[in-house]
Structures are given as C-alpha cells and as structure tokens.
Image (cartoon, rainbow, N blue to C red; front, side, top):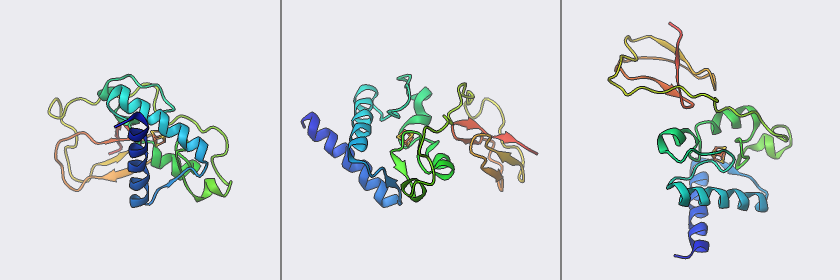
Amino acid sequence: MSKKEGLASFRKGIENQAKKTGYMLNPDPEFLEALFEGLFKNQQRYGYASCPCRLAEGDLRDDIDIICPCVYRDPDLFEYGRCYCALYVNDEFIGGNKGAGPIPERRPEKRAVITKVGDRMGVKNVGEHYRCNICGNEVTTTKAGGGVLVCCGEEMELLG
Ligand code: SF4
C-alpha cells in the first residue's frame, strides 16, 4: 500500500469511528487534512497515533493518555466545544459560541505514576467517593476490587 493509500485508509477509519460514535470532525477540510497527516505520521513513527498537537515521548506508557482520541477529548468538548487540536468539535464550536481561540492544555505537566495493581491497595471499601481533579468526574464505588481508579490519565482523589 502506498503512503497516500495508507493515509486515506487511516483517515477513513477515524471518520467511520467518529460517525459510528456520534462525534463530529472539524468542518474545515484543509485543517482536517493537516491533522490527519500529523496523526498518520505519528502512527508510522511510534506505532500509535499520538496527538498531532502535543510532543510525544515515543514510549507507549508515557503517551497512553494522548493517543487519539485522547482522554482529554470529552472534557474539552464539553467545556470548550472542541478537543485541544480541534479535530473533534461540537455544535457550539460550529455555531461560534465556544472554542474559537486556543484552549488551555488539560494534560497535567507532571502526570501521576500509576503503580501496578497489586503494588498497593486502591479501592478498599464499597461507598468510597472519588473525584478526577482534571475533568471533575466523581464516582462512588459499588464494589471494592482493590484496583486504582484512573481518569484523564491520573489517579483519582479519594474524597472519603
Ligand atoms: S486533542 Fe484531539 S486530535 Fe489531539 S489526541 Fe485529543 S482528540 Fe485527538
């Protein structure tokens, strides 16, 4: 398969997935093309399609949160009407009500190191209440399995 065919098939895959899951892609064709090229380049370079707007480490363990669609996409869509790169957008962005300028980077500069499950006890009890300090999701456990809860690439904070 030529590089051009590879890019076309890669692009089709993302477009189909977006359609199937109800997400909207940026309507600007040139902008979109540049993002697909960036993603495809990263896919070839690293073996995974890391975010074209962020510097990847080249190690899956460090870049796991920025593999497109990154874990920050949905909170950014909710708050700003677009993901960080503006590959994914919503009606509020299209209508000009949100996300026109640059948006803040949600990815924490220093990410928590998630220790392997089994190194220590995570969730101990039913009814523990956790919050994600990046997107604000809050969860209450209904079953204690012992694992560590992670959201937006970081360990969630135990509130009580
Ligand atoms: S910011 Fe957008 S383009 Fe970048 S990884 Fe997240 S979803 Fe993909």
